Image 1 (cartoon, rainbow, N blue to C red):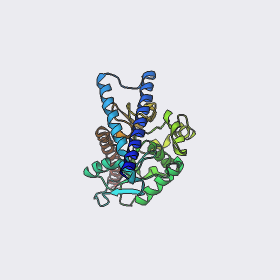
Image 2 (tube, rainbow, N blue to C red):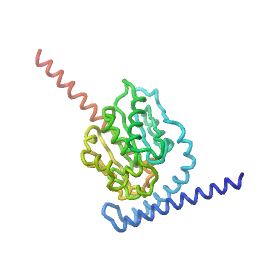
Image 3 (cartoon, rainbow, N blue to C red):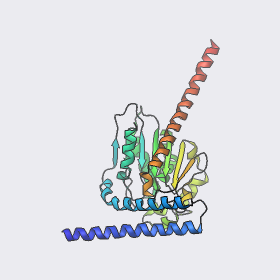
Image 4 (tube, rainbow, N blue to C red):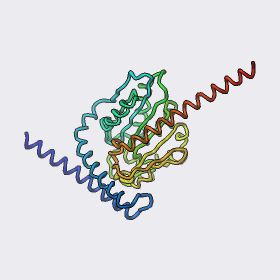
Length: 298
């Protein structure tokens, strides 16, 4: 039995290292041939190397996140008052446990309920995942909750945009944050398995429809965070969204590491606070105008 476990562990580690090494070789090739849009300099190269090693460690640790495929959702902080609801949507072939650190950070900082969904099956289409996301948000939502903050990783960003467009999910969202989401496709999506990842190929039909008239982006505050060291979204600029969305670029985190990055989390906190202040201002202004008109009438 111990021999079998050792063989399985060796095979798993070998596959992870091959996956990581191949992806970063492709990234380096992309940076050499298309340097525009990538940061440069000795300090940036050192940060990218540290980020790449951290990404390898996270890939190896993904084995311990496999139990996340079983629960439909993870929810914490349901009794927070006042409620500050957050929905977390993972990417291709991932699961809710990827967001464990972010869930803890959000709960520590007073957010709740904080819910992470599981999108399955892995071979499903983005349309199916969008329907699942909208359905789960509807089940989690309560009349007393303010609009939600939705944080998405990778394919989850495209899924949520489609859910906002096709299932009116944007009516209950205040802020949409995407982490390394291939809004304009990725060259490496051609090597994935399943219909959903095939729809994320560079120049795919679904992405073209979303990006020709991205009206759903004007419904809510939007922040897209990308990384120059993202080994799976190529080119990394395909994660950027047109105005009125805001875009932020980091230099060192890998694709999975964006969910664990302290720098990315600080950007999310700042965007959430800004979106909340803007939402409160929109509520206060009509109230002030109404009271002024009543005073004038008197």
